[in-house]
Image (cartoon, rainbow over all chains, first blue to last red):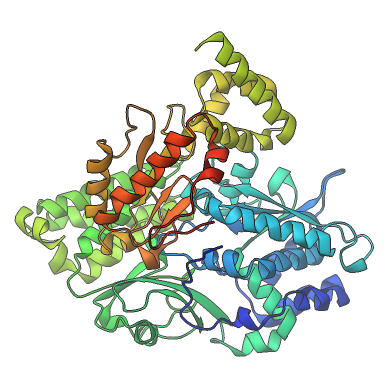
Length: 405
Length: 186
């Protein structure tokens, strides 16, 4: 299999021998296993940063209906623009991801696992199916895993069908249940009422691989990396105007400037952190730290060189959100369309400052009133770009707009 | 639709229900397999699936119309999906898009009259470090240039000619290993 190798730094995952983490996990009681993950201070790698051990504790304590079971779902619906680290993990480190799912199943008492793979990654599926078959043969999936009586767990792969919103965990579960991928109201949370209304742990691909590393190397190793509130190493998907785009591993808490030095993009005028749903950080703020307490991200870093038109960037993102909004709630469905209309007015140089203020208020309303993360975060890029680059977005003329793209 | 082909579609659906189960959570896999084999989920198929699973056809239509990879209009044998995310755009997607339209003679969102090609925009393909990127069915092409577009299209045309009667998965297996630079052989 020819693989596009995106790795630009050595990864911690290279040093993890598959099987080590699970072997450690099987020697621990379920409570001690969750305590180990808690001691690492691991927070979800998908972007939201929810403490993994807390999620597992809730699922472990939740009750299962008669004849049903708990589920572990690996969220491999990597759809955030500018993110591709999960593709690398699923290509190069799939055993560690499945091992993480098995450890999670042990911790919460799940019998079934589902890898929800986005439709665009269907070409990864044959290798993933082969890995699952190998694991069943080796006895690390199936009945009595590792010889532990009663520890039965198997994983199936389910394909997405081209819907960004299905990366939101409740929309993902709706999709698994054969519904439109429309997010649910929360609470109840999936840890209590998830797939088939049973307790379900939904973790990102990188989170599960990190769990395997934490069990294999011990929680201390992980907690010592990163900052106080953002422990551990993190993968970053770096793209755009830099010398060496690709996947990088750094401890959390490094500054944007440090990251740009590594990737060769120090002349950038702005960086979009967190993909289309993230924020745009101008050069003056490159001293900010990538961490949950400062600029949070699922790992997407898009670099914009000095000559880039930032309004065109905002337009690209807003077109994406208009396309991908599920349409269920009004702030998101109508708000994204109005913001895109506003961006087109700005592009033509037909937007007054008063109307731009209205658009910003609309964006803030969407952040507060939208039902799920998509609508709550879709105005971020637009709001940060008009805040940091007012002279670039106001007073344009059509000729200038045509010339800068 | 001819009665014979309706019968065949019905048989296909029953086999898929047999394989995936008669529960609601089997709906998406059934529809995905139908899409792969028939290049669409026709209205008649939605009715049959609804009957088999005990759903209202409107429920099935709701699902088919929600997901970008499903649809009731026939798509081409080869669906070309060009990534339109900003990272690829920075690497100059626009001339690739233009040349795809030129080579295929259709605009984005259209299917060639011979039913061979559909041209679509895709949300981020997760190949942001090697754009412009596109997918042809489940085959990946990276660092695409306008010049390479012709070779990519010709690659598909060759396969189509030799295996026109074959179903989608078989046609995939028969595709020659990609010779063009930057391609991936899954």
